[in-house]
Length: 427
Image (cartoon, rainbow, N blue to C red):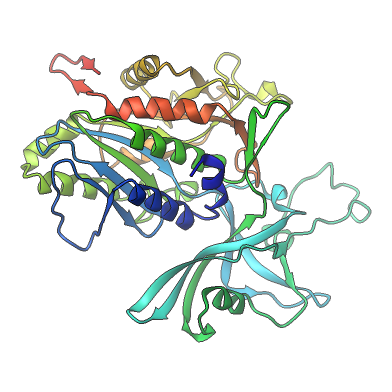
């Protein structure tokens, strides 16, 4: 599966993690369950999921491994979530759906385009309450803007009311969304217990530009980094540490969930790996001290219409390579040590590296690294790939940058990183 296929088949966080799990399974990785005791073999390949939307995959090079080489990306993207009471009262014979924003989305970008719905559904099955993924996979919904003839200020004032302006038109008939979902699953409607459904744009990822140098797609933030880290993880050679690919959910809404970076998911997995290898608690802490984290989440590229919004000296460009992200207030985890380590990783992998800082008077967002560090204190670096139109319904990135991150992560996951007693670090 290439990047475009991965994007096209991952309309929600649940589908992104399922596709990741399918790729890992095809490469010989064995699924583990959090509800069972783990028995791990030397040379084994494993992955575990939580909440169907977070995943940690790892390889065990040897039972006396040195530490953990970690990466983190997230599976969710800003969107509109459908409420449980989905159908609103009809207006002018048109019935709309009740939705609310998930994450910090560019609202207007979702208007005037075909949309569909996907997610997961809890059903009453043969084994009790079961979860099923669903994708209605059709041009189903539409959020119409107000014509300029009725709102002459539309190009001067862009304020939208989520409760009024973003509810998509659904039908003029009596059909319900739940009936459509039941039909898609081939189940009686009464067996559906609960739904978690999100809207997504009906647009396939595509290359554009005079030379195909750009990629345009929904959900580039952060599926582009997730995909590149996955491919780098699979391509890496064996080292002395446990390589672990981490995918979290709910980054766009603060990560404070059982499957988010601000949970015990990662620490639970690492402790269970050490325990299965016979390490004592002291030996586990020593392994953690020999670990490193690459937090991978896309970065703002220099905007051609508004270069003044970027820092004058640290503004990455599309197709310029991997971005190393800095923030004086540590909203990004990058410090001198972690930056030096990742710079050396890129040098050895022959990958171009760019630097990003917010303009000093414009506060930026935070990402997974600093959140995960509340539970696991290891040196960490925040990186990403440059993109435009972040958090819009369709985003744009450079075609060549994905391959750059794959090469960097392949070297990283296979290196023999060691923190020496004198404070130096060797790769």
